[in-house]
Structure formats: C-alpha cells, structure tokens
Image (cartoon, rainbow, N blue to C red):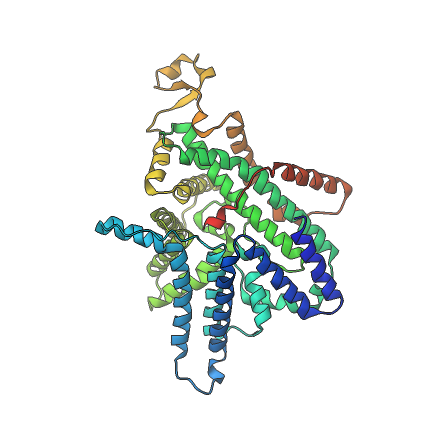
Length: 481
C-alpha cells in the first residue's frame, strides 16, 4: 500500500507519459511477477512456464488453419493443452487428497507428499484453460506475448481473481485513453480499495476469531454458539472475498483497467439461481461457459432434465475445484441440488414471498458453508449437530431467573466461551445481516461518490480504522482454494 503500489503506479504512468508504451507494459509485468515472487521465488518458474506453454498452445490453435504442416490434429493439440493444465493443478492441489483416499479405501499406507500449494494456481490455471478453449473455437484474435503475460499476471487479480477473460482484458492495455492518468479513476479506485480493506481487516477478521474458535474446538457446541460459528464464517467469507475483489477492482481503476465486478449483494438473493448471479460472478460465468455448456452438448439432444443434470455436474466439479476434500465435493453437490430445485420451481411457475425465498436461500447457503469451512465431513457434522440443538441449549447466566426456561431443559452459564465470544459476537452478526441485507454494496456506494470534503473525511476515518486494525498477519481466505 505504501511502497509497492505507489511506486508501480508512478513509474507506469511516467513511462506512458514518455510514450514508452512497451516499456510501461513490461514494467507492469515485471512488477506483477515481483509481487507474485515475494512470498516464494521458487514458484516463479512455475507461472512463467505455464504462461509460455499456454501461449504456445493457444497460438498453435489460433493459427492452425493457416499452418502448412498439420502432422497433429487440432483436437489433439487442444486436449494436450488441457491435460497439462489439469495435470499441473492436480499435482499441486489434489495429489495428497488422492493418496489419502487410496489409503482409506485400500488400507495402504502410502506417504503423503505434503506439497505446498503455489499462490494463485487455481485462478491462473482456469484463466488459461478458458483461453485455450476460446483459441480452439477460433475466438482468439490478438497474439501478443507481452499482453498475454500481463493478462495472466496483472497483480490485482493474480492471487484470488476476479477470473478474467482475454477478450475483455488484453485490448485494454493498448487503448489510448488508458495511457494517461485519469484522476477520477484514481480517486474512485482509492475509495473502492479502502472500502475493501475495511471489509477485510475490520469486519472479516473480527468474524474470523469466532469462526475459527468454533470450527477448531473439539468440544460439542450447544445451539447458539454453533449458529454463531456458522454465521461468523458466512460473513467472514463474504467480507473477506468481496473485500479482496473490491481492492482488486479499485487497483485496476487506478491503472485505467476495468476488472469485472465479482459480487453484487449475494446475501440479498431470494433463490439459488439469484445467489449465483450475485456471488463470485466471474466464476459463475466460467462454470456456465466452460463446464455447463460442454457437458450439456455432450448429451446430444437438449432436454430440461438433461440441463438439470449438467447443472448438478458443473457445480460438483466447481466444488472440487475449490479444494481437495470430500467436504468441498459435498458443498458443490449441495449447491448443484439447490440450483436444480430452483429451476424446477421456476418451471412449474410456483410463487413464493420474497422474504421466504430470502430466508430459505440464506440459511441454505449458511449451512452449505459449514462444509466449505470444516476440515472434514466429521467436523462439519459436529457443527451441524450443534445447530440442530442435539447438544442442548445454553443461555447467558443472567436469564437463569426465568424459571420456565429450566423446565425446557435449558442450562445457563458462560454461553459463548466455547467460541471465545461475547455480547459483541451476536451484535456483530446482526450488524452484518443489516449491512449485507439492507444496505447498498460497495460498488453501489462508489457509483454515487462525489469528491466532497465530508465524504473524504469519512473515507480517511475508515482508512485509519483499517490501518490501526492491521496489527497481525491476516491472509485472504481464497488463497487456500
């Protein structure tokens, strides 16, 4: 924030001011690779090799019709490119999961490889898979290695999205109007960046304490701590990931680059279809274009029933993409089933009050995130048992004088100690419900921003609050996926 970003920004526009366009883009590519390498430079050859390989395969696909010698079919080149990308992702992300599964099914004791997951591998891999698919279908027009490398590595989106599309991104680095400082974009970008930072370090990190304590404890959780645990993670994940996306889009604006919006108030959704139009929007677009559509085409004739099967399978694959564990597969399956039910409901033209649709959708999403966060299916089951009240109910000791509650089997004591919580916990959950369910989201707020002193002062306060809360190492959640 105080060194890398301003230095990168200033040098980039200074080079553009001198009309050194190629040098400016080269500088931005160097800065992005430096940003990626800061955590562990050993993974720099990995991303460089991935870029060169996919650019070469994409070029071979795009120029196949003009090639004089075609000793290998276009389809074979395409399949080779896809398999190499899947193999790369499979080795780093899923190998230990496969070994564990084989050990549990066969009784073998194969040693785990304990491979460290390289930063951003899930995102830069599927971004390039989409590029290869488009190249195979003849949709790739621009062939510039520098622009392609910058499209893949542009540092705001590199580690956790948004997922970019080459057709939308690569031309932006060549547009004339993007080569001069745009003070409006700079101001709005800073505004959105610091709103995203506030979401992350003030809101998401507050919820992380209670979510982590609840999911990590070995003690059975009673009803209210279990619900506060699940809700804390549901809000932590949203504020964390949408905060990252806001910061990424904001930085893009500073460079006059328009990154796609990734969130649109998903917790206002009144159905699962609506939810996936609002949550991780670029992933929804990827699933629809590169998973759902090919699966549906593979069935031959298209029917409503087959489209539902394609929806379910696409979400199942999406769940596995998120993480190497059965809990992620269950999460993907739940969302696939939820979308199937929603589509059937719409086809039958059944009506439902908006408030009831919201209540069902939000609670379904909240329960599904228990599997997303838990380290195992057993861990998820333990939280769900508590949420179902199977471990009893404990209330604050101040309510012990209400004798009729004793007759219901309710006990009293330090009711939130299990999750290191206090009265602040449930108050924060209510505040988060109000923010995500009633207020305008950050993109809507920024759209109404005017550079007046009152708002600048408010933004300064928000920024200072965020900076003061940055007292510990705090990673973004989607780095794990």
